[in-house]
Amino acid sequence: MNDQFVENKIFKKTDFSNKTLNKTEYDNCSFTACNFSDSDLSHSTFIECKFDSCNLSNCILKGTTMNDVRFTNCKLLGLKFHECNALIISLDFKDCHLNFASFYKLKIRDTGFVNCNLQDVDFTETELNQSVFDNCDMTNTLFDNTNLEKADLRNSYNYSINPETNRIKKAKFSLSGLPGLLDKYDIEVE
Image 1 (cartoon, rainbow, N blue to C red):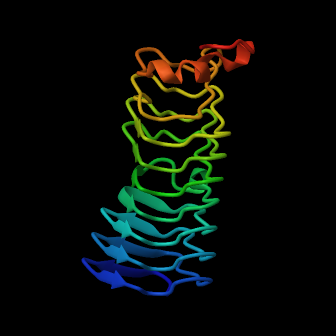
Image 2: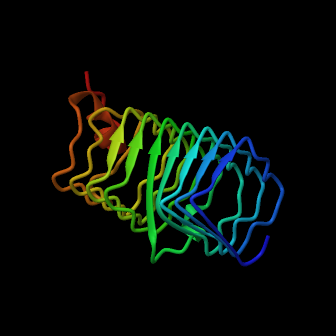
């Protein structure tokens, strides 16, 4: 499946697992209940595509373009989004499991993470300006030199964000999230 162009196609319950789909361009396609686990999507292009109830765990994403791609109820464990084409990337996540994913150094402003499990995710040096983290579990998620300006984390929990090493100007946090901003100081907030 090399150097193909697929447009306006609906894929349902298709098994792409352990396959190489590199250099395939998908434009305005929909994937429902598909299995991409352990697939090689290197240098593929996804434009205005939707993934619903899919498993993309451990896919290879080297040079993959993802422009206006929406993931709903997907399993995205261990994905290295930082290996995607960083010049053109626009993502949205709802009800997804993103544990152990990496967004290292990506510029993904205005990204939505709604009802997502973001445990052990790497957001080091990531541009997340104006992103929304709504009801996300961020246990052990790494924020270092991350830009969270104007981001909304009011409804998320279990995060640890050092205000001295991250940009958080005008970011929104709830009172219950205050310990996640102060845990570096090893103090107790009651």
